[in-house]
Length: 192
Image (cartoon, rainbow, N blue to C red; front, side):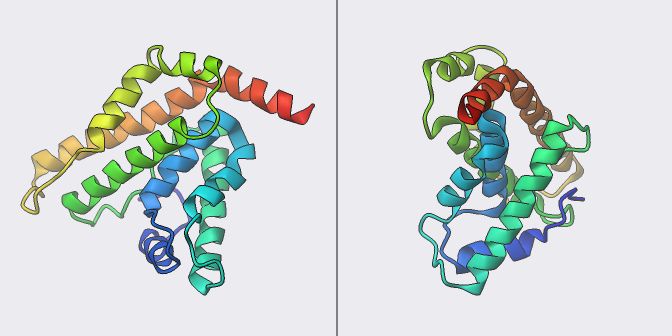
């Protein structure tokens, strides 16, 4: 069950219809990474990346942009409050393991994109090369390659999926924590 007040399939549809090129879970990965690095000042960066190639004058564009803003705000609130109910935006649990695995891979792709794009000063690059962030980044790169066959809907596969999802959920919170000082220093500079 998602903690976000967003219909995953509707967001996927609206993103596709407006020509975004991004998937719902991929957007959430990007948002989590941008919030970890820059905090709430990263909303416009997220929107510009997600909707770079979109048809700006469409109902789907307006709807998906509002949903992304809501997702951004809800994610920021969960990460900043250090709440244990933070979760990844993925398809509903009734979806097939294959569909959920693809979304998990897309989520990691979005997170990695958010971590490595944009201005990365030496200090940030240094933080990325240290444990635990360096290990998390390597693991996420591997997860972007994840696949599942259509016959992989057994209890064992579901167990693996749940473990990986929990690992990524925890890693996201850890990266957010590890980058607190960097994020605070960037926001302090911007406010001066």
